[in-house]
Length: 331
Ligand code: NAD
Ligand code: TDX
Image (tube, rainbow, N blue to C red; front, side):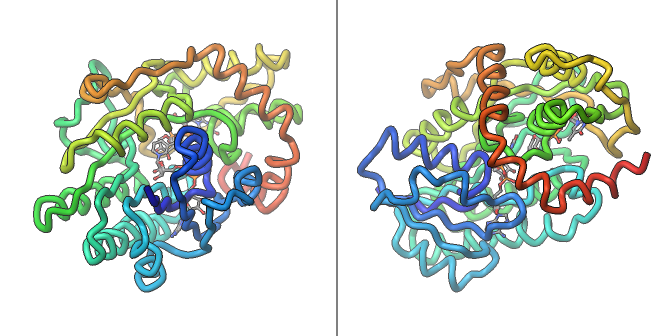
């Protein structure tokens, strides 16, 4: 099978490429990635020389270039996106360009070249916030940030290409991922790397917002199931089944690292901050999905990975990243 993976140099995409080569050594993968600030070729150093792997630097909005590569693929797995909620609040334009227009360009190319499967990686954030119970795939879409609104728009485009043109597309909506190779702007890698440097951990609001945490390898396994067994036109929720408040997770990280709780610094809240995400994954479980990692073990392994791979994240934190954070958190 020939896969075109977009955004494969990012966090989940790079873990997915590694996962696929381990499980299906005969598969061929083209990793099509623009290499934005979040795309890091270091994430895939170990597969660079695999003869079944090819990297193309390109923008998913570039219809001509992406078509050239989609032409030779059996399936498209679309990870490419602008992904950080805080950045979308500061500058929504890039999110509309990539997450909406970019998905449109991929859909057009996939339709033109009769792709046999289009897997669109979306997010539980499209449902908005829920205080009690869990969202099902049939729940209404109610996004609250420019990021989630852009993702929701792309989901609707994917849906329309299935309904109107019969494009064999499926949508996945996953919860918060954690694991190796995540860009150190997201909660877990930011707090682990700040704590290692003895820097404050900026906890938004009262710290009681709840997220469902999904280990990235469990997520890759779920996408594999959807790619091979997912029904066209369907949406599948993917969660880790571990709901935690931000304050609890922060305390746990500090405990694992043996760092003082005094590093926690409550800062002003994120505008439009969703209080709780919770998704019901029973639909995917019927196809055989089950998270295999326990949270405690996977979090410890994740923390260990950041301790041992400073070479990868230090360079990212040194390259304009602190400037972005200073803009955001004027103390
Ligand atoms: P990431 O930010 O780590 O990586 C995104 C990748 O996309 C980068 O390699 C970047 O260079 C590439 N990219 C960005 N714009 C591009 C463009 N115009 N053309 C080509 N490539 C481009 O993201 P991630 O955390 O790995 O997320 C992957 C997907 O999963 C996204 O679609 C995101 O919305 C979704 N998702 C992520 C999470 C999470 O917790 N990380 C949760 C739910 C859904
Ligand atoms: O410095 C911080 N302090 C803080 O309290 C950061 C970066 C985050 N937080 C809070 C905000 C959220 O309640 O932690 C929680 C998690 O924040 P993020 O890591 O930014 O993730 P979130 O906003 O939940 O979105 C993530 O999951 C869904 C991904 O970034 C999205 O791409 C994905 O769609």
